[in-house]
Length: 135
Image (cartoon, rainbow, N blue to C red; front, top):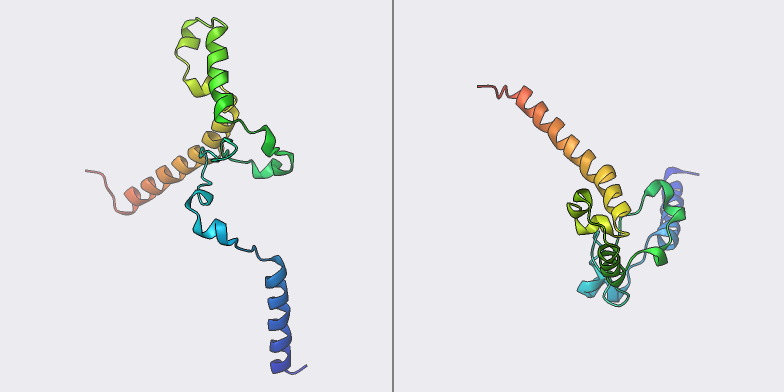
């Protein structure tokens, strides 16, 4: 094959791949604002399910129907308090720690926020060393 024919074959091949494998946009998803709210902790308007972060290492184990709803979270807090948990440690617990959101929040903290914070600190140290910010 000469280079011109090869280029056309390659372009055609890429177009086929693109048309079959590239994610398609849904008109309603593109124009509706509530479809775009998929950040962690947002609530689905119809189901009431909370959008939670997913561990990419175990995404095949994720069950979207096991995700808590706002109603579930309210029940968790009310049931926790009804059980008479009165110790000093339990009184200092935040409400999210009393719910089934706790594992999702811990995952978000350890796998996203802490590495992000460590990266920011490292960048600050690097910039301070580069510009000798000591006074």
